[in-house]
Length: 445
Image (cartoon, rainbow, N blue to C red; front, side, top):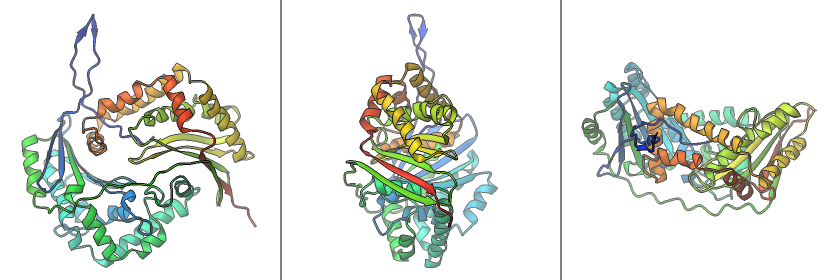
């Protein structure tokens, strides 16, 4: 499941109730403000460990691209580490590592994220580095530098997709699920031909449009002093010019009216089956219930599909199910790899039987509670890292629920009943509206 689980600060507030103690509310206190240039800033103090995370979300991902010009957001994930006006190439990492810190970034359909984890005394260094590449990346982004990172991205695509066993399946599934002009139709890493065709001016214009303070949110969490940190943010980010307003994405409707089937061949030794459905966007009704559906089906050795396919019949090498949540839509997938001597058709028959059982009768309360316990345990396990908390504050802010949406997010799961889980399977996982993709081993000549 792709979920914004994160660390929390537990504020204990016991209230006697007929001899019982109420459950403490989950709260993450924060300070939020906005600079004149439009940059939204969220500060959260956690002095349990002398570390700080600086977490920037640019509200741009592959969904902001256009057909024929894909892969730009991911390309910038690379370019942003290649130096800016006052931070020469390679110095970004050197300065952070010398201070005992580390950094990274990631891109998906909906956002591009950069973060630095540093000792608390290196906070200003992280802010300086982030502000310099926001303000002055174009000063050093030459055509040669773009070409160099373009080649790096192409090689990454070869390694992660084209030369990876079953690697092209995810790209094909998205093409089958989403309309051709839908922002989720193309992969975040882009298409080779689009990366090749992109000019230096195309890339520059993309940066000018999306990598501006009014299209970003900055979260600083950890061992900080709030007034001092606010002053540091103003010092390093106030003078960065505001960009033009970014228009919201207006995706076309995505509807499956039947079953789409396709078979690919690959240099693999075992057949693999993919089943996929269109499902509600993140935080919408049904999204959390489908996470529980995935856990009931494949969340552990006692789950329905694992027990039947892998343990009892031993027709599958592995099986997994997940709700892949996105800002403008989601997809639910079941993936199973056949054991030698078995076929994808056998797997599909067994999976369909188990799905039909779930549609006919709600799961046992014990099954649902086990799944909820798994979600809750994952939620709390992430409490230990301030970096997770910072990323979640950013994600919740962007989603519109407010940075401190922790308790509400968890309640989406803990409030579910077996009938809610059954209803989600009926509503969102019909047998007659889905994608069926099979990857078969290449026939040796």
